[in-house]
Length: 280
Image 1: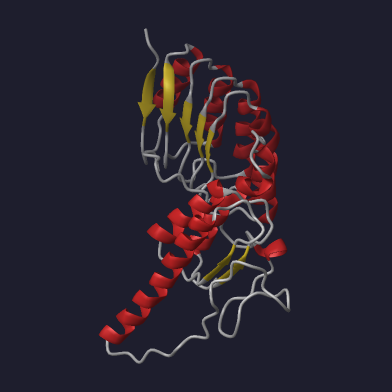
Image 2: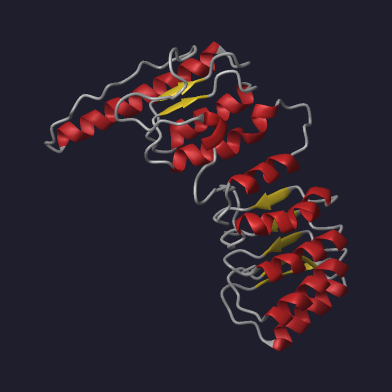
């Protein structure tokens, strides 16, 4: 019999349901297990983790929305993942892991032989956790800057204050530039200046990003005029394809100043969303 799926959402799981889940895992009859938003005791969570550890069929595990709610549960999950060899996709979105939780999971995640997809959105991660995430990513021939381009684009898109971002000489390629282009094209952002000089990025992609940033500001001004508000001209720095001269502090009057070496991910919450997932 082909492995099936167990999907339960937002329920308090009974002892009988936990037993069914554990039996299915141990019998290798389940390929997808989703208990997103469910309530279960610490004892029952431990039983499920032991089932995950023994399963050879489980490919997708969804523990979104607070199922992994304590550091104790994080340790149990880490132990299960160290023993498991089959899980390919792990969803932990909306779990209060904090940096300490990711430190606990790091070894299991980094050495898992099959894991290819990991959702850590809204897990209250900070700088230390982001460094660990970057360390999990294999080189695969990509330059170092490309590893973090996607995560950085999400952080920029969620910021309502960041106006100037200098990424000069950070090892980015056209792959990274395409990520930023998609971000500027599809998400409202306060970003007005993006410096991409001294990277292996085509002039055409840089110009497309520049044009979109300029269009966004023009539309903002038009919206203000249409609502009858007086639009105060901003001190708008021109888009800069080369180094910003002078001080290393970025931005001008009224804009957020950011030191890229320390504040790339300095946010209380770091969002690593997979927009294509259907399990959130």
